[in-house]
Structures are given as C-alpha cells and as structure tokens.
Length: 467
Image 1 (cartoon, rainbow, N blue to C red):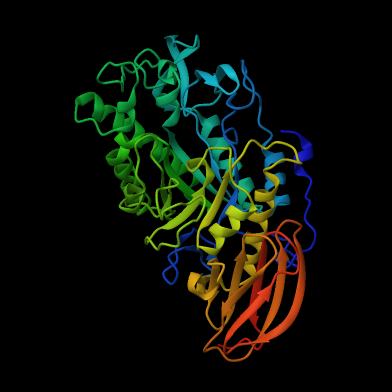
Image 2: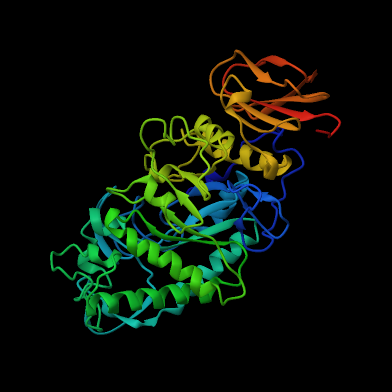
C-alpha cells in the first residue's frame, strides 16, 4: 500500500473544523430506538458509520494485489492511518477461506496465508501443505483478529467481522483447496455433499449427517470468534460476503445463532446480512433477523446507486459499493445522496494513490461523518418534500442539511410554519471549502443560490436553538 495515499487533502470545511479527534466507541452499538436508521451507543447519540474497506485488510492474500506465494503482507497500520486521515470510522474486516485459487485480477494463482484452523497433517492438502485439523484453532488467526479490531477501536473506528466469504467458491476454483473439502482436512469432512465439485452446500443447511457435522464445526468457529472479541465495544458481525441466494436459510440461522450465543455474554453486538450474489433480492435482507443490511442497487424506484431511497426498514442500512458495482463506482455525489437519504456508507476500493477517481468519495465520507457529529443526527430524517433538490436530511424547524447534486443554480427550501432565524452555511463538496451566508427567516419558502459551481451542501441551523 503506497505511502502517498495517506496524504490528507482536506482544508478546514464546515464539517471538519474543531472535530479532528475521533470519538471513542462508548459501549457496543445497538439500533437506535428513536431513529432506526442509525445505531446508537451508551451515550444515546446516533452513530453514523462510513469508511473505506479493502479485500486484504485481515488475512494476507494476493487478491487484487500480487500473484504468487507468499502473498504480500498488508500494512494494517498504514491502512488505519489512511482511514484516520480521511475521517472514516468504519470498515469490513475481510475473510478469505481458501488457501489457494486461480484469480482474475491479476490473473494467476493467488494465496491466502492465514486460517482459523491449524494445519497439522498427517498428509498433504491439494495446495501441497499439511491438511487442516478442523477441531484445532490456530491462535495466530484469532490473535490477529483481536489485535486489529483493538487498534481500530483506539482510533474511534468500528469493525465488522466477516465470518464467512461466499464469493470465491462460486466464481473461482477455490473449493479445490478449501478447508472443508474432503481432501484438505484430516477429519473426514466433505461439505460438497452432492459431489459436483463446487461445494456450495457449505453455505446451506444440509439435512444429512455430514451437513450437521459441517454446521457444528461452523458454529464452533463462530463461537471462537465471539469469545475472542465479545468484550470489545467496536465490533459488528457480517455473516457472509456474497454467497448466492441458496444461502438464505443458513444465513438466517447464523444470525440467530450469534444473537443467541451473545445473549449470555457481557456484550451484544449488531449482526448484519449483506446482499446475496448471484440471485439475491433486497427483500430477503429486509425480511431477515439481521440488525443491519447492505442491499444491491435494486430496480425501478429502488436504486441505491443513482437515487438511494429513503425507506425505513427497521434495520440500519449500510450502502456499500461492493454490492452496487464492486470497485468501479462511487463518488462524492453518491455519498451525499446516501447521507441525506438517511443511509450509512461504505466504499470498496483498491487503495490506489491520489490523485484518483476514488478521491472524491474518500473526501465526502469524511465530510458526512464529521457533519453527523455536529448535528443532532438522532432527531433527523430524510424530508425530500422540504427541498426542491429532493435531498434533505432535516429536523424540521431546527436543522436542515440540503444537498444540491448538480451545478450552480437555485433551489427552494420549505420553511413555512417555522418561526425564527436560521444561520446559513455552504460547503463546496469538491474543494471542502465552506462559507457563511446571511441569516434567513422562517415562515415561507426560501430560495437559495449556490455561491460556487459543482455539488453543494446547504446547512441551516436555527439561530436561537429553538423549535
């Protein structure tokens, strides 16, 4: 990871001045009872989650980095520096399950160097190394997990622990070397119960003696993860990255299993379900027992990429480019649209050095996160009807955050029925420079004109603090 990506390019904008120090996690997150779009913590404040994540931030792999063995070591400290410089507070901690597979970017054989189970043998697995003993955990794996989550927490960051990864066995030849392949372990475990060589049954509830043995071992691994990090405040869980639609009941089971196992522990953490690829549907996420979800782009009026909906699902929604377009989209306009529609934001990227098209999204996530700590987020909700731009997060009568996604122009904000004066602040989203405007009085529609070209944010705050 090149050092040049760590350069912070912010100037002191309205969302950033005086808020450089990260807030430390204060108790595990839980869905806010007053505003279910967000989590809250022991302080009862709403917590907006946003940040960058990358495939290699936990186990060292060659995916999207380098072919060959050993895989390149990921500079985790530098990664945290990068997040902190951009004022991010959340990321997914990626898991890769197979020790060896044929990758596509870059093309060639990729490796994964760290696994939950010891490789004791006897005998060699298909990757030429000792077979796994699925009854013995590797302390290095869990020590690294705890160390990395603890280091993130010290910087005010939350971490979602990815428990399983389902993409690789669908779209690569990863099953051949997977620990639950019969040729890779000494325990006689073969999750490929139909013998087709794909192993997709690994992410299902198989009603057979072998299926039950697989599930028992998976649950033992999940218990070990929970035992490792349960006492930490900055933990979330994600059941599985992009297993297909066949995994629904298994994922529902695992969500309930985590909830039930943590019920007897000192702390309880949010459990998430992310989009199932291929064949998934967003409604499966909304109907799940998860606390948080990450949807796909959707169809028609449900477009989480171009025009994120402001629906209330009873779950915290984390809008993640991983499930919208992979690592090929996302900019500051998308981030601000998502924020003003009441969504949390994640951005999957390759951590390429600046300047790059990634930069605007990186900056905007920091802008929104720091603004979220300045406003009374717990009292705010999307109110498209209050602004002609249609992107307005507001506590009517108190605070309004209005996003203008286009170029310089006029728009209206509905302040009818609201008395008193409002302070006016502008943010140039592209430059992160802010400016103040003249106060405006409530009582009618007010017209505003952006004082600069490009996307803009208008922040209105009741001057006397009243309603």
